[in-house]
Amino acid sequence: MSFWDFIVNASYFVAAVLFIYGLKQMGSPRTAKKGIKLAGIGMLVAVVFTFFHPAIEGGFWHYLLMLIAIGIGGGAAYKTGKTVQMTAMPQMVALYNGMGGGAAAAIALVEMYSHAAFEHGFALIIMAVVGALIGGVSFSGSLIAWAKLEGKLDKSFRVPGQQIINGALAVLIVILGWSIVGSDDGAPVLVTLFFLASLIFGVLLTIPIGGADMPVVISMYNAFTGLAVAFEGYVIDNPAMIIAGMVVGAAGSLLTWLMAVGMNRSITNVLFAGFGVDDGAEASGPEGEMKSVEGFDAAASMAYADSLIIVPGYGLAVAQAQHKLWEFVQALQKDHGVDVKFAIHPVAGRMPGHMNVLLAEAGVPYDMIYDIDEINPEFPTADAALVIGANDVVNPAAKDDESSPIYGMPILNVDAAQEVYVIKRGKGTGFSGVQNALFFGDNTRMVFGDAKQVCSDLTSGLKQI
Image 1: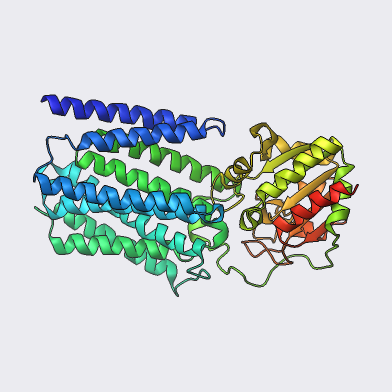
Image 2: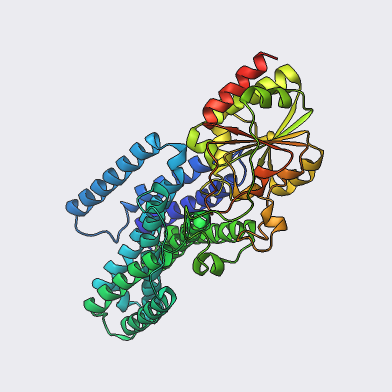
């Protein structure tokens, strides 16, 4: 091993340690920011020392192309990272994740088109092919997920004979992949057809999936990207890619499983059942009259409560109301001595951790935020509960109505509180298109309006008490 081989491999080891330790730190909201910085430093170390890798050939022009690519990607990421709104964070994550899968697939294609993968044995050829498949599916599927979340695709739909088409395409992909593995040098036509089929498969796999399932889909494609990167790391003998890909793949897989458990559904059910396909379809569920109150009346009731549990949802993010909500909570605590807690459902928002990030941005202390298992036993003894922009995660139909599409999904037991106040823009349904029985409960009062304005009105109401 040459000196530079040793230095580069040592840098990759340091980067891998920073990746793993950084991910560990991201497991807690208190240390997440530190973890992100450590992982970023690890990536910087890996990128910088790659310039000294002995395998890089081509001289000045190759280095120039690398610098141009880093400049374009880094510049775009810096600009979007600075300007993205919290409501658009899920689609940005989906988009960036797709870019990772596409990059892994591109590496596989280069290795196969240049015949380099075929010079190192049967196992590496298989890894290159599998990496191209997973990366291609992750790339196109993530772009569809981004388009759905961004509103570019207004609704989900199924192609007639969707499952038959998907099955036939899967068989074609296997045949093409095996043909590539069994060839001497991988015919460019076969490689091209294989990659195009992978892209189409990712599109067809994601198009039927409704908006309510997008958090699970984003997590799944995150795992796919990690696996693709790990496979291609083996192909080009890059330890940093192998370790980083394995870490991302394992974390994404675990998160996907946890999200599916949070909805009480299997991964296959998410991918193939079509739940939430008709976004915006006519609502199913209870009918009746929703009882509404003005912000002042709601504020007065919560001011005289001993305990209040707040459930944030995507509507809070849309309205950018987290800061106004925190002002209201601080006034309740300081002037009225109310014990306030925040309850977070695992699939609240449009991606894992969406609500936690939103509350942290407003300055809500971490020790006021509770997950579903911690907070559910406290709802029956809570004087009041305040729901802001959440719908499906507080719908009692998940417990009581066996005919409901969300039956069996663990929910926050908001309906058990003595009084329930729901801030909602209108009378529509949630992302799943299922009407919420909570809104018609005897102990529920609706406060209609923009969440940001309503939270401001609540704070103003406290000052008049």
